[in-house]
Image 1: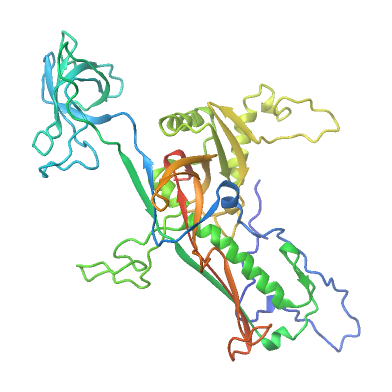
Image 2: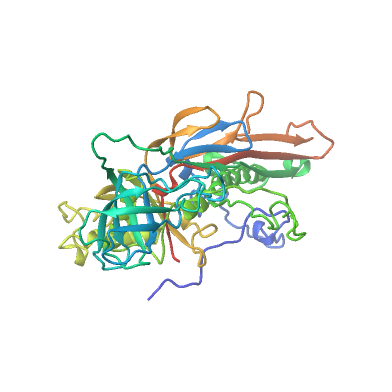
Length: 487
């Protein structure tokens, strides 16, 4: 048995630029002597229809006075290289190891190019990457990579083991530094390593909306008493439409920060792609990096459905161990994901299989049985919260392609180097920067134009309510976020 598809939920928008019969009474028959019994007040069939509040809950807003927002995040403290190979044979006492990716700044073609961060005297551990293998070596570096030379990605290691190299030639291995060792009376360490900072940036986008009503319609009273969110009431229908436009714009202020993507070079929305003559822009826009885009690119992704077992959550926790290891995290999820977590946690109770006892409390006959959980602790604290945006059928709810079921957001704040302030500053992991200066604040602008409704700005016989904001979202430490999606 399942929920029938018909009748379903209504997806027809109520904000139209043309009159629709669904918006008006059509049964006015003055030849009928019997009047209908009418309910004047509008019924709020969908409750609070707004989907915003996510960013207000987990982040903050702060001004910015530039078209580009930049910040620096710390790199790793310790050095490890993967997929390294040696041409040496088994039992060789020394080995020349080739490092395929010494780092983002490596360029052996430059005379002063950087090299792998390995120096003479450092001790390293070498481990076979083959699944199931236990082969390892420990050694000391005798020849370090030479900056700007052909050997900038090669290092010579003398092994501590009498049996020499344990891996065969060409086997992919991991190498990491664990210390150093020098003889008595020798010089100190040769060379030094610079700190590795990761520089990220984002650009704000301008979001606009408008509501217009003619002066004649403003002077016409309706028979329906509108009752909207935030206490809007009255018999003037244009007040209802203006208020709905405002609510819709406030939702877009948040959902644009969640869904925004940068315009790729050569795309129809982006800049003209120089040098090819193809991909001429239709809009000449930059786009912006939204939360989902950033986490999908630089964060962690759990694909293939929702985690429904402790083993799957353990794999998530093990990934968090390799990232920032933030103690407290909030899971913003859709309804199905929330139920899956409730069922998973209930199954940990020996009496939970029958649905009679969730958690540690006494179930008496007059008590409403609580079949849900607000969070749990397993290595870290995880708090669960429903995200209306993922449930709303007019937004992310019910999507088949590209469905996202939830997102893990670290709680608290982090310290970053702010390029504008020129110093370290504490910022929430997720926050919004809006354009503002001493003379212009573009956080949330609204103004009225026309010649109706008190406006005296033009000869247009109408009132136009304009909305504008310019903002970008900053995702600091995206490696601490998790995105849960179907594929």
